[in-house]
Every structure is written in C-alpha cells, then in structure tokens.
Image 1 (cartoon, rainbow, N blue to C red):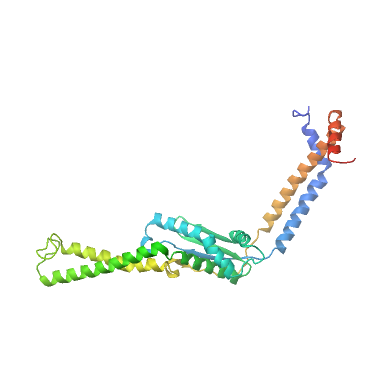
Image 2 (image 1 turned 30 degrees about the vertical axis):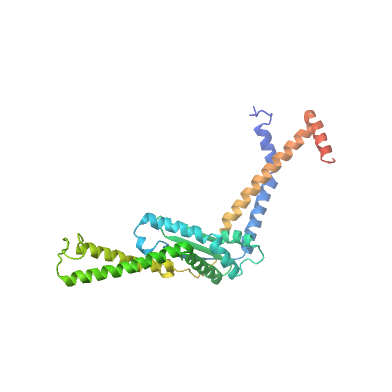
Length: 293
C-alpha cells in the first residue's frame, strides 16, 4: 500500500516523477558545478596583507580588560567612515563607485578582529600585493590620527600639563629646602616647613607630578606606530586561495534542489490540469494572466 499524504500524493508518485526526470536532475547539477568551477578560474586574483596591533597604551598593557576594550574600540574606528573615507579619496579607490558605494566595497575587503589577549588583527584585501599593503598601512595611519586629542579634550590636557609642571617644580623646591635644613627624619613629621608633612609624602607627590609631566605629552601626541604595531602589514606573495571544489559542490547542490523543486511544481501543475475540480480555476488564472494553451 502506498503511503499517501493528505493531498493524495503517494511516495511512489514522487519517485516516479524523479525517475522520469532523472537525466535532468543529474546533468543539470553537473553543468552548474562545472560552470561555477570555470568562474573560479576566471575570477580576478586577490591578495591579503596582515597586521597585528596592540592598541592599548603601554601603561595599560598589563590590564587585560582595558586592553581588550581598547582593541575593540580601535577595530570599530578602523572600519568607520572617519578612517576609510580619507583613504578612499587619497588613494583613488573604487572611482567607479560613489563614496557610499566605495565604503560598501571596502567593508568586504577590510577585516579587523580582536583576540582574547587584546591584540587586533587587521586583514586587508587588494588586487595586487602592493595595493593590499598600502591600504593596510593607510588604515593604521588613519586610525592613529584619531588617537590625537582635539578640541576641549586637548585644552583640558594642556591645562593639566601646565599644572603638573608647576606642581613638580614646587615639590622639587620643597624637597631641596627640606634637605638643606637638615631637620627632617624619613617618614616622620617634619619640624620645619609644611607642618604634618613627611619627606616620603612629598617624594610620592613629586613622583605623581613627574608621571603626569611625562605621560600627558604622549597623550597629546596620540599613539605612535612603534607603540602599537606588533607585526607591520605584510607584503603577500600568494593570492587568496579559492576553494574551487567547495564552490563547485555548493553550486551543484543548489542547482539540484532548484531543479527538483521545479520538477515537482511542473508535475503538480500538470496534475491540476487533469483534475476537473481545478481545470476551471486554471483556465480563469490563464485568462487573468493573458496566457494561451
């Protein structure tokens, strides 16, 4: 007994349809696979330049959470219009496209990923090895420019630097005066000068101001290539390998599914034409679509 579904179509009927169209279902996917394979041989070659960066400031390198967050922010900035737009214009990339279209193409050719250790990997695809490396370097340079503070942030840092310099000089003079007086004992209250202040406390204050005097100028200048680059953008020697066999297999499978669906739909249409219950409806449908037998 045939196993039938609610519409009365048995598994044997489906098998008959497949057998009747077996040649099409075999030859079609083979042809599709061969065409896809041929396209992979004709596809233009592409090269990928790789770079590895550590975007976190050196002072924060030991803090994994801050390092990871800094790398994620850097990755997002590298793929933003702030960095990519000037590169598209300066290097004349994708001139046949509008600026928005060029961004979309760049999005398919630039990849920035962050590992658990906080390192950022930048992969840039280009038509030639030189172009891939040049674009990768341009992206890094463009991102580094965004690390230079501007506007109010820069003014605030400059004020902090000025205050730190004045305070550092004041603590230096205080320590010189205390040392000259000879009336101090390490880590004990002073008998002269600032009441209740110890020589060690003043020394710690001096170290803090000195650290700011050294660190703030680096913040004002932004990050440098020497600080962040662990591996400079490479000059690729081999094109990106296309998995030709996988592409051909996927094309064959997709073509087979499409043909199988089409065969079943065509058979269902034919069966509907033979049914008195649906024949009139099909005639009305043809008339509405201006179709003829």
